[in-house]
Length: 363
Image (tube, rainbow, N blue to C red; front, side, top):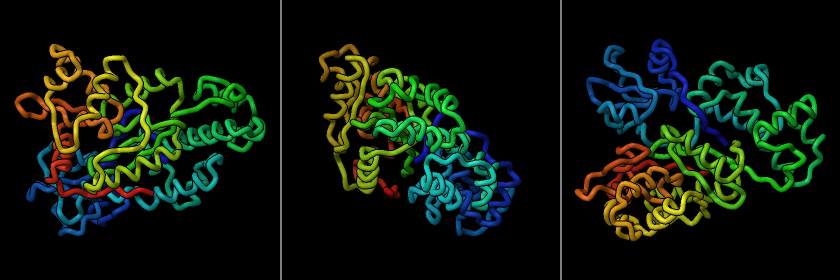
């Protein structure tokens, strides 16, 4: 379970990245990417190809940045592909959190796993927009909410989740969920997790009833999407998982493998009346086909509302599921896309049977 909020942190220093490249240190996979100027390709740090000269290397914070700089993916290390897992040392950290979700992990606990707390902090800021300690705290509070909803005693929950006093627990709980623990028996929250994919990390959010978010982690509007969801659903956002997230992760694996054309995970998409009309019509666009903004406007009975249709597309919080990538300009050009035009082309190529894709694996 991973949670994304806020801006990404700076990548490691050039010297550190150069050392990782020279050592072919695969543990830095996902931390940075390198472009090789002489070949025009970009790779993972642990790529088995011949070592490029330092003066021919350009470092990037994301695969997207490398693509936008004109580099193409390496065919050996396949930097656009993913196995859905972070480096092994981060896996150990996640596993320790999940072993006892209510435990407060301190720096000494992180060191006991042979992990440098500073490195963990940097990795979490880079990939998840928060420090590991902030993640651990949010995970504890999310677990506390689940236990409270199932009838656990408040005193037991507070002490069992690393809080030294009931008042400290109540304050932290109230700041996160907007209400006291005692008033949260019937409450719900939006739990989130991040899954890797051939188009980069995706964040999934779901309530107890349905999936409400599927978005690209590096999208600039992500903070706005979170704020709007919190407001419309009246729920806090915390890291976690539920059956809807598990189902969608399986379906995403099948989709990127070209085996799934229609998602069946339950979804909820609160918005204005106009936005919901547009989003419902998007769901009717068949797999492998496209529609123009003009055609979409005519289909909803608002032929002069092409600009408003485009704005509603941009507010879509369920990327790929509600297929706004299937809407193009009348001329056939791609037009805008919140996740970037390279992703829009990637998805259209996939659905048209032209993509050579890596597959994100479900847990």
